[in-house]
Length: 201
View 1: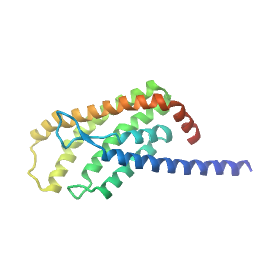
View 2: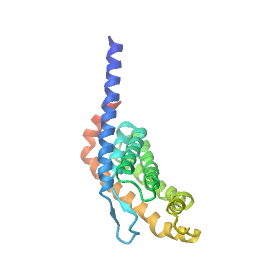
View 3: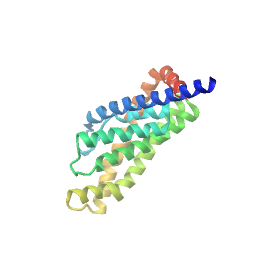
View 4: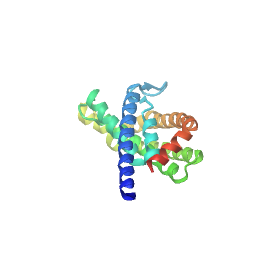
């Protein structure tokens, strides 16, 4: 009887997790559509808050749940909105950036479960996202736009300049905005999040 109860609770927990991840993915997709440019940065760099639901999933259910939200929202975005290249370059870049950002947050928070550890994870995530996306844009993402759009190839110097004055500052600003927003949100939702964490354990 006790084993059946444990099996039932485990199954119930899995269903709850799947429903929660699905709902957070839908919210993330909607937030991804509500993007906007930041003054002083290239217009094609759009800030959105779709990492917030992914962060919620990651700190409550673990990093794989956060990655699932990142993946689902980008699949939805490509399937519904599409991409000017015909290939999901932008969606892949968004997924990679989101993954790099949320994994440290999930690790730090789930290890110590405090506002301090959450803030540390958000800062580390912002730094890692900025550095890794600078490198990936230089070696892969920016060249991919050239390959699939058949536009003139950018020189190494031009790509480096775009990364230093556009892409890197964009990721720093986006990380800072989401960090501030999420810390405020966390302070309001902390009792609820603790309950969800216990429910999912």
